[in-house]
Image 1 (tube, one colour):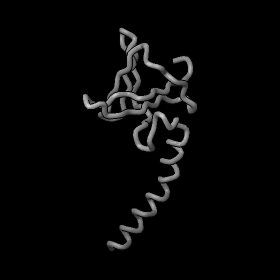
Image 2: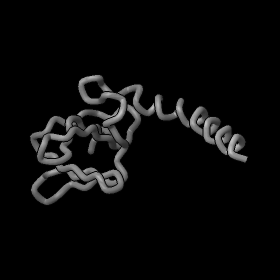
Image 3: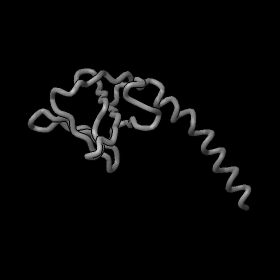
Image 4: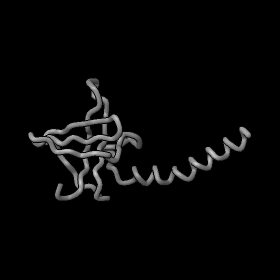
Length: 98
């Protein structure tokens, strides 16, 4: 029983691993260290021009002067780091024309 469960878990990881690698394959190295870039679940432009991006409970805001990059897959993504004051955006990718 335990061996079967372990085998299923390993097969699941092997099936999902290529998809996880592909998701990180295009992020520039300066932005991502294979674990800190995420597709955004939500993107909002606030009244003052600030962009707010979120993924689950992770929320970052970037000012209108923050350098936004074009997203190669047409979806919003952001890369984060812990600044010591909380999570902040290192890079933001938005679809062209956003």
